[in-house]
Length: 190
Image 1: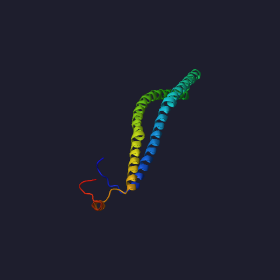
Image 2: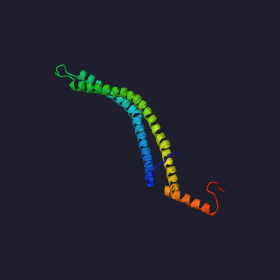
Image 3: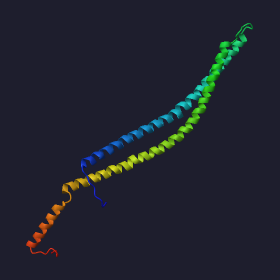
Image 4: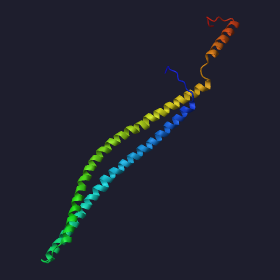
């Protein structure tokens, strides 16, 4: 680098380095939390819901069969003069059929959600991989670069920095007068 920088506070750079490091730690924690949440959602769909709805469908099928059997028994025992024969039993069959349809619809929805969620999770993990790279590589490089800058500034500050123009002129005059006292020529170094 051939340019110069006007640094007014080495402490500000040190504070910035600490802030970048803290940011990286918080970002790592956030990325980990997001990945855990996505895994939890995937687990819920793939394991919990994928087993729950088939089980519920089986139960609803059993309830429907029971309701139909109860209706059939009620029809065979109903008297011809009943105004509303087997009303309650018919109602139970309708409720059981509705529940069975609902459970079957949920199985179809879970399958669709599994596919969608798998795709979205893959995309998400790809983006999180890039974010991990930023945290693990780019931010670590930034912290290392800031550390090198701080070390260079500390060395620079220990040496007292470059001479001021007045000090440089004074040093040249002192060197010239020393040379003339010792019989050396300013043009020809000995």
